Image (cartoon, rainbow, N blue to C red; front, side, top):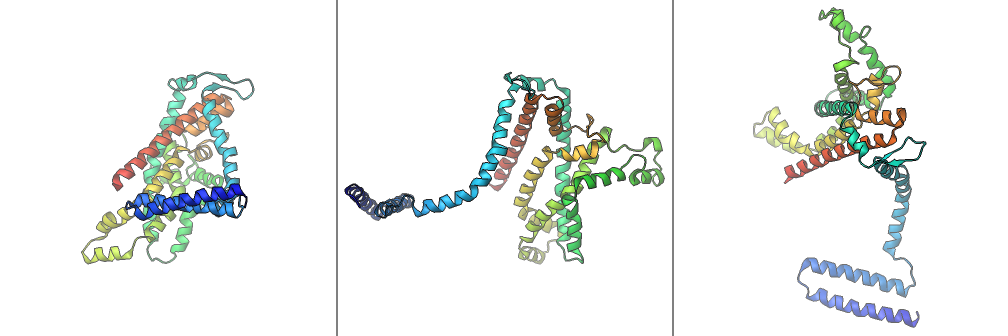
Length: 349
């Protein structure tokens, strides 16, 4: 070890002695913890100088950890972060993907105020979210509680309930299209023959005011199996002793549900609420496959925000305007999510 390194080690050792003395006399626990951390750092530096190490053991461990994270992080930056930043910038420009982009400031956002199709899509999306989220949560929780009981074949029924979530969207939307077909579907046939509804008054499930109801019912049926599994995990984490104690106190099934099950599932319900809300705001494929008809085009009564973003971007090639709509959707989802987190925090306090 050369003279320069010896001198540096000597200074570090002197500083170490000062830190040790400060630790011995310090009575404040927080301050003492800070001094102990400083002592560890000084030990590491001294060890590195004495052994001619470039990296400390902790730095090497961190480097290995970052090397595992790096591929995913690089992919995230290239395929997610950069496009998001580009979309933010594009929201303030007018660009058709071919000619040079021109800066228009808030012109794209001002255009939204008078765009009746945008407001129709926003209204449809909000109705879809309000209808789908609570129904899916209720159906998932009910199904989870039912299949959490010791009944014969519950593994089979759990699989059946989960199947719509993993099944091909094309296949299950085709089945629903046949079931709810206006003239050939079994639902309308039952309404005609059993309930005596006039043939001219039979509902058209994929058009008009009923299309959103059909989308909501389909979404509840498709997603409830997935969220049922999440609720099942939450239910199995509740201690049976709580129910036993409640039974000894004379609590009935309703009281057990209200005062044990629901409070114990609050964290699970919050997770389901946030994830389900975000997914519902992003709805696109279900609307196109179920209500898009043969050409995949949605009517005004079925248009949702993500479809309208796609339509402006790849049908009209107004990429700046579509990015502005995407930013509005992003802000709406962000605000709703923050409100949910704030409410959950307030309840916890």
